[in-house]
Image (cartoon, rainbow, N blue to C red; front, side):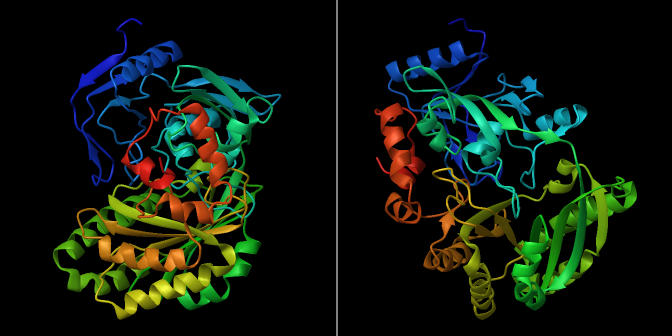
Length: 440
């Protein structure tokens, strides 16, 4: 292999939130599958563990290693758009933002996506990134094929017809099966969504929860702790015309209020925790109702400049309201001061072994704390509620679950670990996080 790929030695890696750091012995940015395979061979010979890393938007140490860090910087771009099959094949290191804008120029779109788009396609799918949807599932569920370089340097193409047993588990692979080099997604002609954002009381949202989910293609809401206030968002397909937010009003809502002033409020709350309930009451009333219509990624995603740490659990949809009410009761009776809203989203059942929605219709409850604020007491109390309801933790967000617990809540857990045993028997791609959640 030529030394045309970037290499760094003993540089500290940090994730986006700053709660995970690692000091790999070396890092490489392969420019081809051959260079990647050679890097894996060298790491194995040198006794180094290997982890691929994206943009570090996971809050867990899923990408941390003291061995070889694989950066996907040079594996980017669209390989092919197949309009007959309605698919796009993209290199693994391509940021979702670049994919979305490129697809829009071609008159195409993903069906659903999460609420940010800074992640690489491989990083987002490997950890189960999702948005909200009554009928449309996570980004991983939109995968139609993927390329995977395994521990012995073999390049596998996986789909429903080729290596189907690997495809069934590798769409959310946690970086435990190999290094993804390319992904083929299903796409559709670009469409319009009308977003309706509206303040609503906690009591009304929880009372009308099933109706709101059933009547809207994409429904989500945020509850502001220490208040009885929520902000709801309903996204539904529209015949148009496009009517995006005005430049001034959009900047006020998405930048000034949701990022600028929220950053100030979080900083003040960290310095003076006793002020948080008052700040929450003001924040929950700051966002007004609005309606706008735009192409999907402009509606699904928003800028997130205030950094935080997050825990999220997927629950059976039918227990979500009960669990959320328990979280509210816990916060109300505790000395905790929570400056970040609690986010609730939906997903239909899918067929991916380690998907948080695998085999069951799910609701997600996500809790956040401003970066630099102690979060352990809050997250521990929430996790106790989530696990009592059979919750499945998001693979890229803070949790304390182990393989014994996860094997109970994932009926196909053994299917995943069996494929891992076959593809990586020597655990080249292992790290402390994977040892905890998958076992050894």
